[in-house]
Length: 388
Image 1 (cartoon, rainbow, N blue to C red):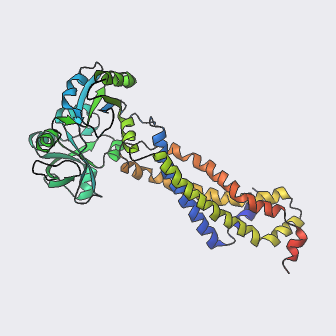
Image 2 (cartoon, rainbow, N blue to C red; image 1 turned 120 degrees about the vertical axis):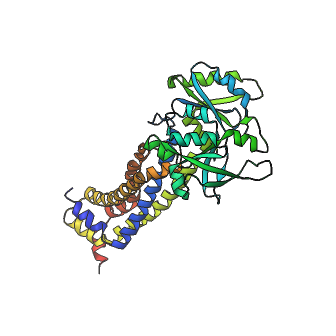
Image 3 (cartoon, one colour; image 1 turned 180 degrees about the vertical axis):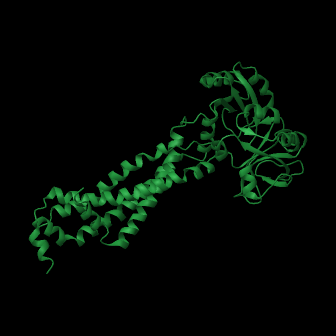
């Protein structure tokens, strides 16, 4: 630590260059923190949260795009250990513009809230209005705020999949109530939720009547989720509608993974970022050592050995990369709540940030190898003579 003032002074020798390099490191580790946290969530689907541990989801064995028959409901209900079953379909909706995504779901009022009874609070009068209004909808408070909606408004949603009998893709709903998640975690996950009646949807759509996209089951004992999943799937083995049943959290992750190999995509982006940063930071360190050749020669003349010179150069690199990593990872940690809101249902843990500090150290050592080697090979006479 006694050489810290010297390392600090040399780091800020060229303030503009140091600030620009530091900003590059910060941005790189900010991206690392955000992307690696998402990848960690996909690699460790169990997480630390128990949210959804008591729910299973049953889809078509081959693809979620292939429907199941509503008639399968009775067989699923008959499995011991299942306390409630509901059914849903993917509506694929947006409001006015495709970028205004709305997580709209047609639901069966009674069975849906039996499965999700621990998640939501709905005012009794509003729930009554929902039951009695064919075009009624319950909307999350965050979605109401986002679009400036209020209870009593008529809202048109455009479905990217489902046409009505007249061929229109536009469906109009009456907002009759507000969905209030019971916990802050659920509130952050359910920001775009829009529930409406499955009966109205099934009667109004132009095709697919009598089918559902998936069933959701609440189970009495989460420890039996694997066994119950196997029992459900065994009911439909070798039938025209074979199923695949899995925990709700695994389903959410699998749904997003349909976009592609998430891990490969994220690591490819990070690889490109750090490859570019390697040259940028390495060049900064080389320039810093090159400008200080006479000073390093004086230090050697005063008795500073090669190990000390090595330590000074490596220390400068560690300080630069360490500060950038600390700030970048800190910013990514602060951004996790917002990112979690965008990725509904995905449990983002800060545990994914921990490798960032080790990477910062390794990165600092790599970029300091060549500059440190040059400083150690420095010939005192030649270095001092180059001043004249």
